[in-house]
Image (tube, rainbow, N blue to C red; front, side, top):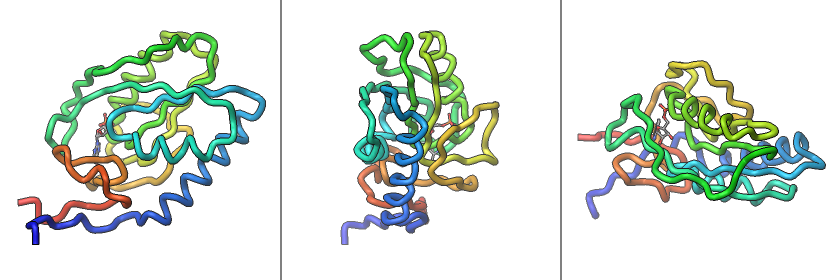
Length: 177
Ligand code: IMP
């Protein structure tokens, strides 16, 4: 044994894959006849993003942004920093922000304000996970994968202190100490 306890499965891989297919079908329908710019919010959404865009049947451009709000803690500091900006202008484009998880919503609020100022033709939000009871601001998520309670989750791109991003499922870390 390596001493590593694997997180308990909360949402299995098969359920995530099915939900991603449904979200992609919805997005493909909603944007039919249009070109789409999808923004991957690093680091957490890279796996969800890669799976989602491969199911969207539209011409798409991919952009990458980095934001950080957490350090190694499991509670939001409320402070959002941009660690990487995208290279292309968004002026006149149809844009979807693809996030891993919306917890307090402060990161998303920061992103929406920042991106709206770049004058896209439209701006929507897709998040794999949302914690409605934790929201501290008014953000509307257009495409939601799964709703959670307040539990801290890992896997499928999400980490705890940098670990567990590669898990193929969404799980809960038990016995932290
Ligand atoms: P918010 O600003 O509080 O909505 O937090 C957004 C960011 O916090 C996400 O992009 C994640 O990086 C991180 N986060 C929030 N909840 C969790 C969780 O349960 N597991 C892992 N990361 C989380």
